[in-house]
Length: 79
Image (cartoon, rainbow, N blue to C red):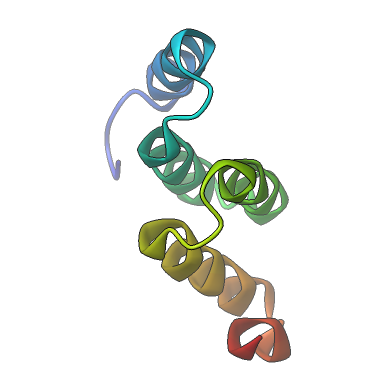
């Protein structure tokens, strides 16, 4: 994600989620795309959407912890 087509990645994730809204790996990828843009609020929101489908998904939970850490909310990373 460092040098890629961020807008294209977001569009592709949107298409994928349109086809299968419960595909939690796409939420994790989309959150990483938002993080590449330093958009922690959008990353956080997308991760919570994914967690509605699979609340115990380790990828989503790990990425959410990372996002909270980047936001400076250390207490949330421990929750």
